[in-house]
Length: 634
Image (tube, rainbow, N blue to C red; front, side, top):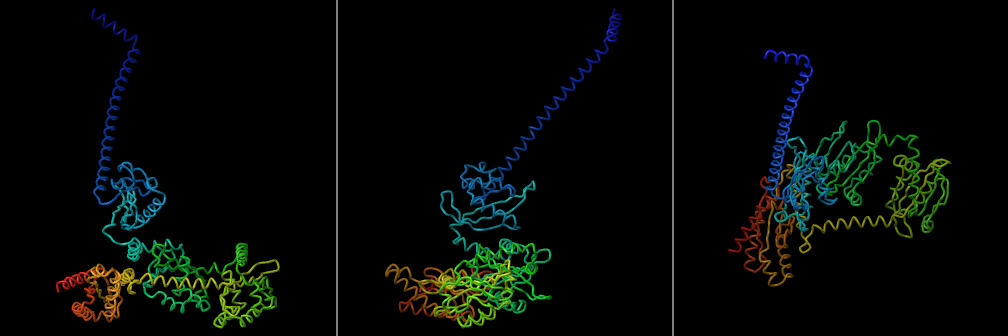
């Protein structure tokens, strides 16, 4: 029976082997599918575990950064340098940004948190920090959360995170209560200290001038210190020299290098008073002139720019414009004609007289003339030689002091040469009109007309403008003097002392050997006088003390640096006799105590290798307080 069953099974497999094989394959693939699903589930579980672990690490890292920023003083944050997105901040910064927590700040930009002006200023400061290899530090006045003005020290520096991403770290520290210094003074001092850094000087130059200058000068108007830079063929600037007395140096070098015909104009333009007056009206000044070259005179253009963040500093750049000045081609002819027409249109101002002149023959006719000019100035309305007729008329009516200058500058060759070079000719002088000297300006331009070139000459009344400019310069000089003088005593004030301190610090930084002493003086019993006799008596008390100090330190500047506090910077003769002068102050105090006079506590310190005036002042101040205590005990 068993054999029969086996035979039957074999027969069945033989007859249905295809189906059996199919069933086996199906079973095999089911097993494979189940194994695949199991592996896939395990992989998904592993991936989810990995993501959870990474998220935990990121959260832990963010918590660490936030904790670090929270434990740093002030307001702190870090942002992506490319996108400007905040990556982390502390709670103080979040509160300042009017957010409940740092999480509400992360992912936003400064433009999404603050107003447009603040965002623009912050972006500019970020760019400055990214351009430097050291921390960028500056002072800024900003309102706190309640809107109260506070002074903040801002530090920004660039760094790269673990992923190589460039970031900016910002730290803001409130220094209102422990730093008594105005923002202008802080930034001025910082600007000067950083001026010795090539990177900051390059930043100033980049703000002020376009590329292409061969020579660049960085100049301190107060001290006349300068640094000269030279541009090589690749456009790279390198320091050539440093020096003092810039304007005096210009006068010397102009005699050697400037083309003789342009020398006087260059000397006038580089006069310190003239240049400062021009920059006061417009922060830039441009001037074109010629230098002596191996193959003849070459044209250069000088551009002077005043620093907007500190008006004591100017940048002077010189570039070669010889090709532009000498090459004139047909393609630029139309443009030149438009410029000439625009200049002619400008003659429609306050002109006394306008002439049209044939530059070849000199024949001219009067185009228009004001009544007072036609009555006083006896020049024919038309004639055959404009230049001769004008020179003869000026001989009769010019102010005597201006005649030779006019005659040397005004002739056909000079006028046409200036127009060829600059596009116009101009000359200012004085005419005697109605018995009084009056400033006028002669201006000439060339027009292309069908009949040929025509010279258009206008004479304008600039008397009022000249007197206004002279008054402006005088008032400005007076205002600058008054800003440095103490109104009560007439000696120099605290502002003047800070400026003097800064100049001495600059000389110390340059390594120049300096011998000076600082004397600090304090008027005793001023409060008692004010309380018992009134403030008018107190003012007289201070004035009496000031006279005593000035009489003692005859050869040194005296500064009133506080209500009852004075300072003296002794150099030269007073420095050589400083011990004797201090002894005289002691003799005065002993006599004043007996007679009821003004007693002045006094302390002195000499510079002994100090790197700043402040250190010398501090020692002198300590000596003054010691003297003050001794006077009270006596």
